[in-house]
Image (cartoon, helix red, strand yellow):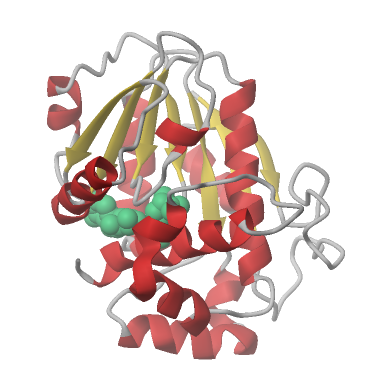
Length: 267
Ligand SMILES: C[S@@+](CC[C@H](N)C(=O)[O-])C[C@H]1O[C@@H](n2cnc3c(N)ncnc32)[C@H](O)[C@@H]1O
């Protein structure tokens, strides 16, 4: 697995950790096996105040977006070692597509088979490069552009060069039938420049999976890509806390502190 793919083990280890809590915001029974020792090592190596909490909140936030949606065509864009196909109760008829780099998808399919994973929806896993022409393999797997899609972009955009991330967001919108929804997360520019982030950023660079960019104007990034923003939340706000964020939400525009954004937008 290359540097950035291995970050999927990190977030799987975070979900395994959350699963062990009495007050877990979700349970992911396969996460520990998928993360393995490398995932645990990365989880410990990248631990920072707020990181564990944010990863749990992000997953729960997106679980709730999915739970509220009636869309039955769903794409996990950069699915990593996500096991929502197994752990969520999907409406009947749901078809779930998972996109990620081919090496990660191959390894994931092998591990899921070994673990006897049983998917709760029709699922197609597709190895592709999201900075290239990725929608042909998606169409070939059965994805239908005339049907509204729920796109989930969790933990991806800041690993892509900013231009590629913006192109991807715009391309997702251009592929979206009316009624489609996009939900995911963005990193703030403050997270890139805050003194409190620098050690974590250094470690990510050293491990070949640098965070490349952030924005303090997530609404503008989404709007410029053609999306209609429904909401942008920071951890601690209602709907993005789940009693897990231990601090008050940082007011928007605060400088010097890392901040993450959770968003939902429609086509
Ligand atoms: C931090 S992981 C997040 C995975 C998953 N969404 C989660 O929350 O656990 C980032 C994922 O982005 C994927 N990724 C990064 N760049 C990519 C690219 N150019 N094409 C496809 N996938 C990519 C990596 O392989 C990795 O699985």
